[in-house]
Length: 222
Image (cartoon, rainbow, N blue to C red; front, side, top):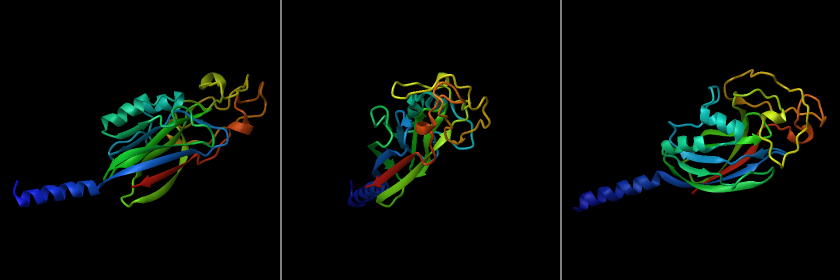
């Protein structure tokens, strides 16, 4: 290879390297009594996405938002050539706890994060295609809870996953009986009640109510 071609090759390599970055993502559960199911964290092209506010949920989003199953989203991200971190907390992320992971990002890539919120019918923590900055530094995202729009928010134990670390009430009559908005939208939060043997909800309003944001996310670009 002559010097000119060698110089062009080196320049192209350095240019490509300058347009890529390693990032660290730290996720903190900012709620008082809500749990995050296994998280999916991915960096990917801006042309791909895991969910879109105002659009109907995909089957993969529905499976995650109603049952905490991230395998479908993981496949979607992998097929899009994403850098993926699946279940960085190695299970449930408890209220107040944090987890962190490292990912690779190409120039122009975006960051997406999903996980179901427990207890809920179809609520999930969502970061949709957050643009990763070119400049090195530390950035903070306040992540909201979204409603997948796939299930009525009846707040009944028989309609939601019931892990042993959550104490549910019984004999609730149901908060909502139908889906008012069948598109992905900001979740209004759980209502709950204080009657463990009746009332409208099987959720405890002293523990399971929440307001946005539900997570604090710190992104460090190296």
